[in-house]
Image 1 (cartoon, rainbow, N blue to C red):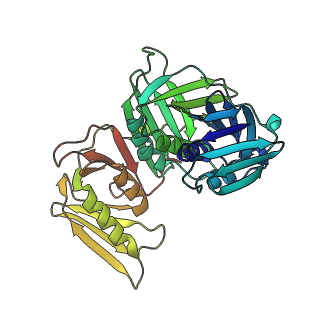
Image 2 (image 1 turned 90 degrees about the vertical axis):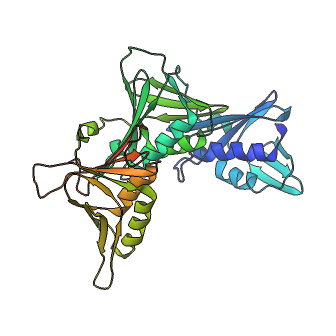
Image 3 (image 1 turned 180 degrees about the horizontal axis):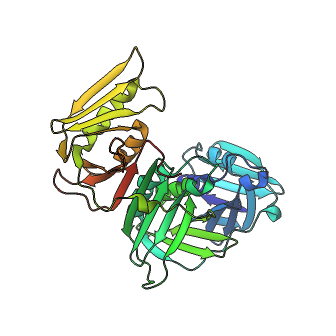
Length: 381
């Protein structure tokens, strides 16, 4: 094999191919990137039996062929090459990479032992890349990072005729975002796909600049697969098995009491006041007609409080919330103002979860379909 390729194009392609490779693997061959040269294109692929990535780029192919090389090492090299065309050549088990005055010699890995990439099923629907990327960033942050319960480490995708809902929870909060979706399957049964949150976040970042992203959900009870495709890039992932908890029922149908606050002011106040808190401690939020007061009792040596403007509708309310979880929700509200709604419980001394949504102004709620439900106590048991 021998080819010449633009340095920046090659570096970007290698970076994409290795992003989803596992940091550690019991099978070293799965840490490789498969490079296939044919006609005037290079195809770079990676696959660890759970997630695959594939991209194609234009190159000058002098000798077609296929080679498997260490992905992380190639990525490190490609990202630091000088500004010159890259020449890539193989001889027996050695790979030569030359760029300007820089030269590297690498060992190839056995191609015949590399697994075959999964086949992609028919297209399920199409979604705008920017809307999809924004929705993923808003929701995936609420997914659990505790592998003890794998089912909540994913983001649940629920496909309707004209919309796609993304749902995530870690038992302390639930995030939901609904966006427009072109499925071409009016009247078909709803589809659900539970995608690992880490994979979905990488897909959202990678395909955010694409005009559209094609989504395919396929497979059977033994092996269910989702694929995302945009431009010359494709990512596939096995779905997480299991029944996702019915978190939609936790959202109240109506909430009468709420406060509207400037989002940026609240974010800055939370960051300042929480500086004195011990780890995992909560902030106390007192909502009155005079505004909002934040209080933190960190230790005998450090306390903090701050008051900011808030427009309260309903009764005075006091709630305690973990600042990190609250900030995740506030940072996902992409509007000037935020509405914090107060739900009720059967115990009048115990406030229910707070519902966070966007406001385009102090009077008008946002229509972006984003909702974030937060409670310091477990929402699910």
